[in-house]
Image 1 (cartoon, rainbow, N blue to C red):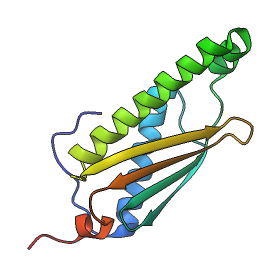
Image 2 (cartoon, helix red, strand yellow):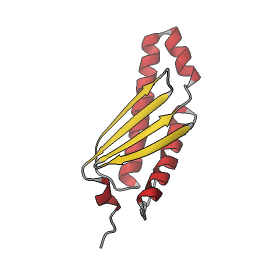
Image 3 (cartoon, helix red, strand yellow):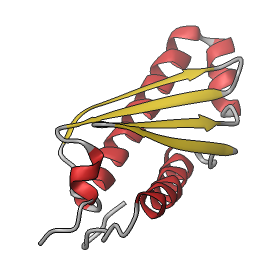
Length: 129
């Protein structure tokens, strides 16, 4: 997702809604479908993104056919999502990202993405004087 401008965050609620849209776009780009439902929580210098996802059928098939190939494909897709998310967070929101962690529970179809920032989120949202 290439962005030539950065996002002007007017409130925490507006930021969360915009990030939800971006995360859904990224999921659609990487996995071929958006998320069913998601929530963004902010705790100090951490963004927590919880999402209900539909399993990608081709990954289920790959894993059933050859578990190693399925795991490798899933790993590559997760790394792709993290790369795309990093690009949006740094280019659009101007966040300094330390790390992005992502995990997915196949049975529950739930994912959690944790973004660790250099500063508290509020410091990025505060208007620059």
